[in-house]
Image (cartoon, rainbow, N blue to C red):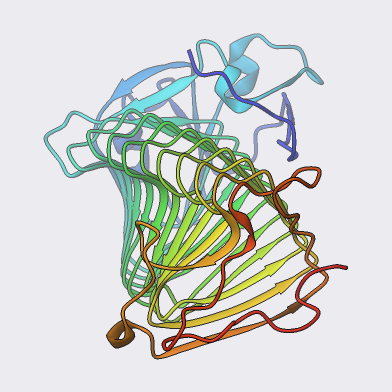
Length: 370
């Protein structure tokens, strides 16, 4: 059973009940399988699916909507519930013979609502080409490796969704793909809840990223990543690890109780932190271990970390050798980062000292709130 902490962000509850529309195809009433309904659908049609477990591999190459027939669940109109609390619900479970339980491909616009997608040899859900997918009040879980794999130029929006118990990654973003995670919960992955690469773009808003084995978010090479009003907590290595040259922005979020650094920036990281709580991490709050580092930090509250509040060093806490330090640029103001012995102090200090002969004190005047 998954226990989800809801404090710190808003998860949208949903009301049950809706009216059938023209162009609605029903499974299994009119079609024995979901794929049969997809094959018969015209662009813009709605496929309503009755409660049950559907073991099949779906290929969606038309602009359609797949959604649960909530009325058939017997729930009264106006009852509020979370999407993963639907019982018995509608589950699409891949056979394992295809790379994904559900593949969305082509230049199409697809919506999935009130469904659980599981299984698949590589991923539960694969979105590719120039396709656009919106998932609302849905769950992606228990794949053989990846929850949702997004590649090429595909664009995905997950709104009030659960991504859980996928062995490698919850969301893997490749190439020039894009994703928006709105009011979602990403939990219990062996690798990372969200991993980005290539020239991809991602935004995480109002979401919980909890208890993943290695990273909460691993942003390696993405064009941009924005995290707002979210919680990244209890992950096995860093809450957020970033590299590459894209702009990584974290606004008004909590990064706490991760079992190494709260935020770990490597390579040519370009990091902007505004009005965050970075607390109770077992390493430093923010750790730079790279060679061309840019940080802008404004009005952050960085407290009770086991290392420094902010630190520039290598991964094991030893100063970087000269060959690896090319440029460190730090700007910012009004950050509350207490010293040891002060209330909520960081154990090793607020700011790590400079590295004589390699890196002068990188912390500008006014960086700390007096």
